[in-house]
Picture 1: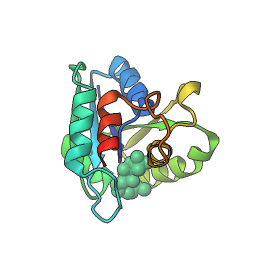
Picture 2 (picture 1 turned 90 degrees about the horizontal axis):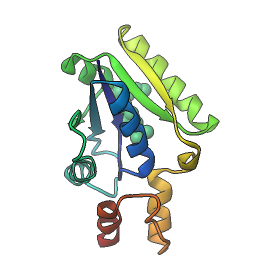
Picture 3 (picture 1 turned 120 degrees about the vertical axis):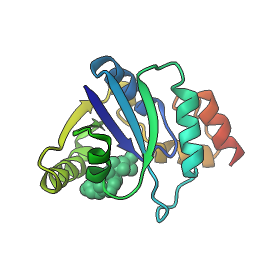
Picture 4 (picture 1 turned 45 degrees about the vertical axis):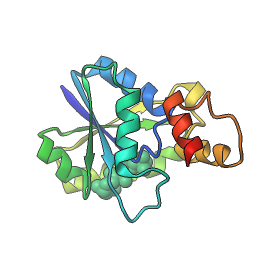
Length: 155
Ligand code: PNS
């Protein structure tokens, strides 16, 4: 069974990696799909986000990194995969995730969304929080891998 793990990954954090690691154990193949959304102000370009994911996840033989633009349901159809996984951290994630899952179901009835609950130690972690801490000179080494930390410092 294959699953798509879509997101912005701007940049990838230990929270994302935990979800990918656990998915890689539950599914035969995990496609990490990075949204190429040029209208959104990202810290990292699409190529940089992909590169950081590739560096970080190089040990996984059943994880591939890809990119998509447009609707997730169209990308899923193109990949021949109707399963999507999203991480749930806190109840505050739930409303938006539920809305997305239901919208995707409406757009494509075959689409199934699986929610994976984040481990407690990552429940507060997000790419935005990491970027904010880094901008103000805080230590982010416990939130992101070394390659990501170095890349943020360079920006
Ligand atoms: O990491 P993020 O930013 O929470 O990921 C959000 C993402 C990329 C999964 C979501 O914005 C998405 O699927 N965008 C593609 C456009 C789309 O299909 N929108 C309709 C679903 S509501």
